[in-house]
Image 1 (tube, rainbow, N blue to C red):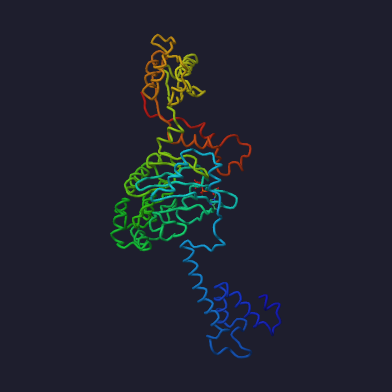
Image 2: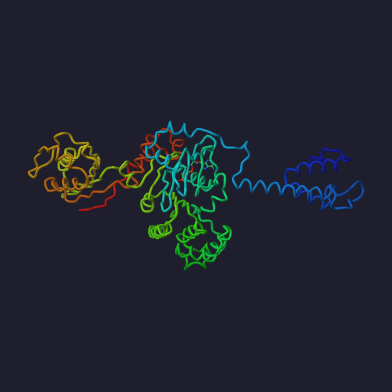
Length: 500
Ligand SMILES: Nc1ncnc2c1ncn2[C@@H]1O[C@H](COP(=O)(O)OP(=O)(O)OP(=O)(O)O)[C@@H](O)[C@H]1O
C-alpha cells in the first residue's frame, strides 16, 4: 500500500517486485503472498509492460517464490532438527560460570552437599547436576543437584514458586539451563546436548491432562507410534493393565473420570517402558479414595525405574517417596523421611486430656505445666489450654536438656532428684511413656497421645528456618512479619497417632 501510495505510477511494478523479493528472502509467508498477488494479477505484477508474462516459471513470476520457499524449507528444517537435538551456535552458548561461587556462599543443609558430590560420580539413572535457571533477574532454580537411582522414588517438595516445575522443565529438556555448568543426564545421556536420545528413556506425566478426541487405547497407540515403540499392541496392553485402565480402554478420554484421566496420563508416560519417569503432581484434583488407588498404581509401576515426583501433599510424599528434597529456589534439605524428621522435626508431640475436662481448673493445668517443665527440659508447651487439653513437644534427645540432678515426680507426688544414670536412660519414646504413666494418676490426666513430627511439620520447620516467602507475598504485603509458612505453622496442630 505504501508503494502504491507514495511511489510514482511508472515505478510501482519495479518497487513491488523489489519489496516482495526482499521480504520473501526472510519470510516464507511473503512468498505465499506474492504467489497470491501473481495468481490474481494484483497490482499488475503479472504484466511486463502491456503484456502478461507468458512463462509462469520465470524469476519475476512464480520462479522466485518457489526457489525461495525450497531454500527456506531446507534451511529451517535443518535448523529445527539441529535445535531439537540440542545444538546451539557458539554465540548463543550458555554463560560459563559460577556454580562453585554459589556453593561457597550458600547456607543450606549440609546433607545437600554430599548429594551434590555423590551425583557427580554415581551411575544413577537420573542425574541433575548444578541445575540453574534464571528468567531475567529472577533466579527460579539455583545450583540444584540430586540423583535418582533405579527403583527409587524421589519427591521434590517446596512452596508455590519454589522452582519445582522449572526443575521438571529442565529435566524434560523443555527449558534450557542458564549456566554452563548445569547438566541433566538420563541414563548417562545429556538432555542438553542429545535431547532426542535422552528423551527416549524419559516418560512424563504432566500436571494437567492433555486429552484429545480419542479413546484411551487410541491415545496409548498414538503415543506408542510417536515414540517409535517396536511392538505397539503388546506395549499398549501392558500399560493398560499396569495402570488399571483395561476396563475403560474403549471409552473416550474426555469421558473418563478425573482419576482415570490421571491414570491415562501416567500410562502415556509409561509408553516405551522408560527408565526415568517424571510425575508432576500425579494425584492433583483427586479425592482421598482415588488418590490411594493412584498411589497403589504408582508403587506398582515404580519397580525398576527412577521416579521423580513433585507434590504439595506431604502425605503423598510420605506414602510414595524413598527420599525427598525440599527446595525453595535452591535445595534446602534432602534425605529420607526419617532422616528429615530426625534432623528437622526431632521431637515427640504429646496431647494430654485432663480427667475433669472440660471443667478443669487453672491450678490443675498449671500443675501439669510445671510437671512438664520439671520432667522434660527443653519441652515446648502451647500457651493456650483448650478446656482441659494441653499440647507440648519434647525433643527426642532429651538427655541434652537434663542437668546433673534432674527432678522427677515420685508416687506420693513429691519432687525427688534422679541419678545421672537414670537421666541418661530417660530418652526415646519408651522413657517418655514411662514418665507419663508414672505421673498420670497424680496429675489427673486421663488420656494422652504421643506422635512423631509429620512431614508437614518438617516441611514447615525447614521453610521457616530459611525464611522462605510465598511468591508475590512480599509484593502484596510489604509490612508482613514472618513468612506465610510461619503464619500457617502457628495454626498447624499436631496429628495424633497413638491414643491411650
Ligand atoms: N516462563 C517463565 N518466565 C518467567 N518466569 C518464570 C517462568 N516460569 C517460571 N517462572 C518463575 O520462576 C519461579 C519458579 O516457578 P515454578 O513454576 O517453577 O514454581 P513451582 O515450585 O513449580 O510453583 P507451583 O508449586 O506453584 O507450581 C517463579 O518465580 C515463577 O514466576
